[in-house]
Length: 344
Image (cartoon, rainbow, N blue to C red; front, side):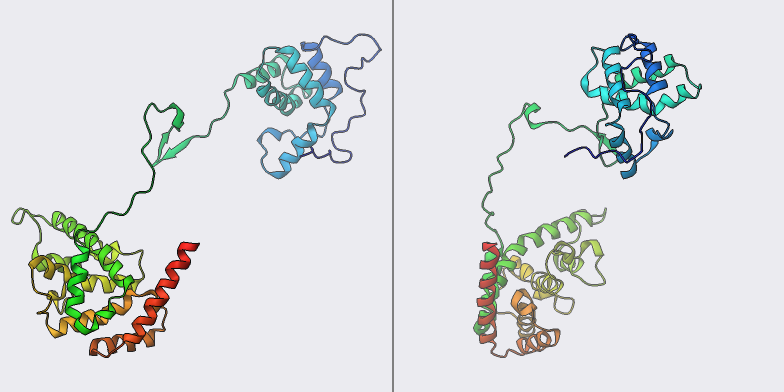
């Protein structure tokens, strides 16, 4: 990107060009104190802001860009490189900018030339600014992978571990529904399968957290399931819906009812019935009605219905109406959505 040209009339000095002596004789040697005094006296424009070093923003950047194409910047660059031949090139620009920003102190008589030289020399010795990275309020250093004498872990994607509890829970649900097993769509079965082990881990965490001196093992049985349901009696941090927060709210509540039961029917918990070895063919009719009412919320297509239509579908499911056509259409739509997502 080309350097922008200076503003008309800005930083222009009527004085003679750089390096031209006043009387045509040989000027002071580059890099000396006399040479710096000559540059300040002859080349330093009066338009340089006195607070240039502390300025920030676009206007300050433009001012510096204008200064870099002036005779002053050229003369000071030659002077710095002649005064410190061993100086790193990366620091020359910083030293020149420091000299430009503080040269007015010498012109006003506030500083001596030697003091300005000391300030410029110190700017050349100052280490480069390095960005400080912080984590949780503490400074951390970034290390390159090439500098770590360890082998990196294999990041190849692995197949999802097979659920140890989900398939049995889904099978019990289908047997209990009987002629209404069509309501367990592939998406609903996948959700119940994936959520079963997650719910068990959550229950174990609640049991460990609820341990007391009188009950070192914590809550157990239906009391443990009640502590994890999304009800007012359960602590907010214990509610299973907090674990399923990535799912839509109706889906998370329906999964909690299916897996953990409800306050009205605690025995409706699929996990509790499966762990207790209860037969899926001897489920009370009211419990099966609750399961049918919650299953529509496990289909993304049905969740797209209006609230009134979903409420009517829930009531018809609870009554046991034949909704085979509705769930078959929802199953086909869910398959199409999953294929689109995979294509993306």
